[in-house]
Length: 390
Image 1: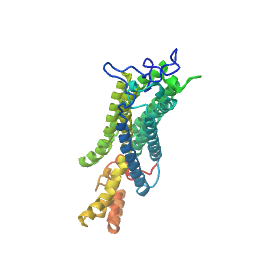
Image 2 (image 1 turned 90 degrees about the vertical axis):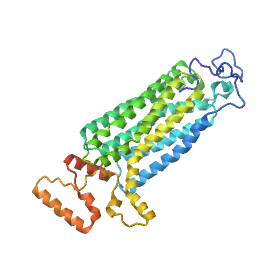
Image 3 (image 1 turned 180 degrees about the horizontal axis):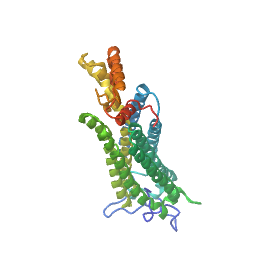
Image 4 (image 1 turned 45 degrees about the vertical axis):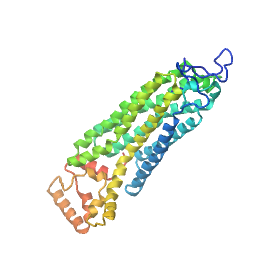
């Protein structure tokens, strides 16, 4: 989203004679005059949103890391990609805030003078354009690995996950190459000159394509966990609970659709410095929603573990059983009171084991039950023990 596209206005060095310092970057619409002294600004929307979303990302990430450390202390590749996504998201939003602090963006282009142009804002824009694709890809890869970790026995989901990782990786890393190739200075060009060229103006179209791809990939991520959840041997109530947890991806999908809408608007205007603000707002919401989706299973596990304790504390009631306190999100996928032995000997052994554990500790019985089908059994163990490497 170059703030000065080809055909709008040109920076110093593109005129046959030096332009006046107080010359606006673009002529204002009819009936308006440039306001250099007290220009309108819409940066505060993005700044407030960033001030809310960064603490939310830190909170969600801390809760997930706490759950992983205290309930399931081992690490998987999904955990490492999540931590990388959390750091990169905060870095991206921080660079965006630094860009807004430079004063070039958030004002109408006709309220900016030629002397307001410096190389630093354009360098920051190039960095944001280049790193956006890889940063979003890391968030999506974390979601793919999370699905693979939870629904590991489903072979078809394994193929869907790796297909999604490959396709999104090729696209998002290509956007980095395209941004650098089109908008990086060449030869004696400055960043201002590079952004005023026709080749850099082509990145507006690339931004629209990226927005459309975001919508499609988010829809893909939203749909693929639905069939394995529906296929689980679970009561309808617990299936709905699992679907609600993963349905938080609707937030990311809506943010992507909103981002596509604003990319199209930026592509149709010369007032880039003003129109790009809602797009940056949508990008922040999109990244934050993606991080929230990554944290929902862990937050649900934390809630299921400690909510009975909190309820008992405030109600001063000791009626809650230890079994209820130990149930987590991952145990929601376990069918209860179902034994499916392969032969009579296995049946007798499992019943004896069950009676022994019930006699010693009732809290352990939930972990000894096995689902109705072998496929569900492997899945339940995977959900109950996410420490197994994907």
